Image 1 (spheres, one colour):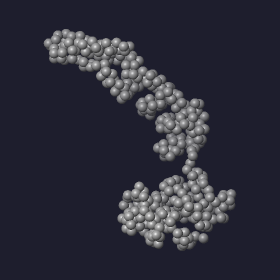
Image 2 (spheres, one colour):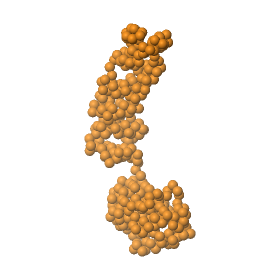
Image 3 (cartoon, one colour):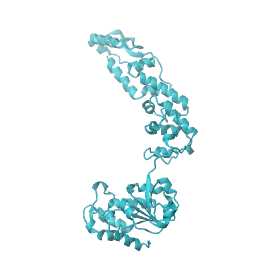
Image 4 (tube, one colour):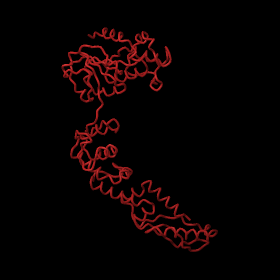
Length: 399
């Protein structure tokens, strides 16, 4: 006969699989609830009658401490043993009896309270559909605050403030920061389409704030004006850092923009009429794709001559087809042999070819991949003599 321990393990597994929560939500969990037991066979009764009788008595004794739990017996006819009064089910009189038996009474009470609170506060949100049972359990006791957040955004779509500024009683920015995925689930369910920027689906890189119209600490773009005549347009400043959205709104009289990864290269870049240099971004150059006015400039990218440098050139030219490479050619590489180094293995690119490269650039990338001159050849941009930069700028007609 099944033991109480085995029965409890079986029911706890069903609990873990959310069986009873799902049944309650669907209105299918009714009490008294009978959990069937496997009946002994005629053969078992014939050969192990005393053992089975003792097991049954032990089972009943173990059930005694559990209030609202009882053993249901029925008269069953057997071919050999005749009519026997055997256990056929364990009966739970109430949800409390079942939950206490499984050691889940407090969890069950909280679940019911939270579910009812959510159903009353946000009637259009369906538990098990928009909000999962797991989410409801994971945020036990927090749903009053979560509902209040949803109500605020519904009344104030795209609020244009920082999380820190949200006037929701009892809710601070840390509360939302740690529960963004669940708050997103609620807001997606209750907000109209025009109050959601569906372009942003992931929570990383301030995706939550971008999706729901909140302000955030934006990445900074650092640049230098290379023409002293431009200083007056920005109050005499020349080395400037701005949030990316502010940089996107600039209206400067520039027709050339240089981009270089290296900080010192940016700081020391020579003066060029009607030009500026953006520097120190590395793979954060992806931020530049939202700077639409760069499409109207002559754009130059200066990176390392290695496979990684050409990958970044490929990336930025994917954003701006007007991008020209600067000092990233074979002639520059061969003229600076004393300064060659090795590319780090973890940065070495694996594709055999890259999109967006010009034929001469693609040919140089292929040679670097093939270790044409030496294994993992790398020429760092800051090792290139400035005389070569000055000559290159002269050839480009820069003044």
